[in-house]
Image 1 (tube, rainbow, N blue to C red):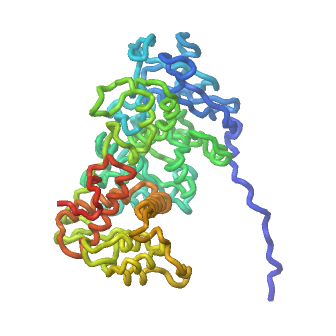
Image 2: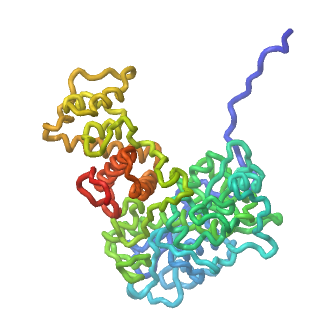
Length: 509
């Protein structure tokens, strides 16, 4: 018995958002340049924002004014002029400004000299959050309560899922939605330095776990999570409220052939239960990378920074300005905030009765070598780079590790070479250079493939603090890994306090 022949359907059309499709721009060249009136016109653009709020290119006035105010040190009394020293551009908050260029002024400054004008904040890590001083339109309406009654202290992610109705806050879809952080996790130093934990729902949550509080979580579909975090493609900003709904909308900061038509200026699914300070911090976090061209223009800049070396504001040289564009983990030291090593406690995972039980995934196994004093270079190569063929080198050395290294080399996928690489022998003049290349390659591969946020460095910090109190033979293996990591990091980040010893196998006192 048959029901007939199967029917196929035509290819899926690209999704469309037909409501208001004629109210936005799809042109990536639509943008507005914001200029600092104290600098010459050939080097005074400190911020460029996409202008997709009108078909002919336009930008929401309040969003533009607040973005400039954030970069200028949280000043909400600024104003625009079309020409240097020209009349003030008077617009309502929800009106649109056309594409082109505008000068941003703040009252109380002189613009004849750079030193007498307003300073620019160079990066998010140097920005101070304006507690109790949010722009008026960023404050919650008086009839909206931020209280969230459906919170599980043991599972904040589940609480966020229940609160958001299992729906992505941008698309409204339920499938493939997952929890995203409003203030990014990698900004933990900034988060705690600015006391952002005051806005968490569960006040009993440990300070270090404040990031995982339900108030700093929202649901996003997986394909929107990446552009939200990595590409900083969109933010949530308040715009004209409609139909008695929340006035927070999705606002694109860069062009997108698909996300723009679908989501730009669309009302977000309710964000009223997420504290506005967290949403505002996310807005600022996405804006500051747009300041980098201003810092890279090879001109001195008047900047406001968090620095022990300089009184802020201060005029920084072009070379110093360039340092502010380097990611914090790779910075050699410009007065920025430093990440503190994790202090383990008896209640932490991996510390049981004072013994280190958590093993980093790169840690040598117990069979790698019995004591740090007998660990040779080939053994470390086998432990740190198990995918490399170092068996012949270990055998040539005639060390106790030779057998271990030979057994750790895969036998089926790739056949062992007939002749060992002479550069792996101790008597080869390029041995050290070759080993350095191996270390650097392993470090870069790990960063790019499995840990783009450099979380392994924090684990090494944590391991050091634990191992300072450990003396067993098993933990000496961990010392070997930690000391090797110190040698690797010594080549790429000399600012870290624990990168000191030239000999990688000298344990800490």
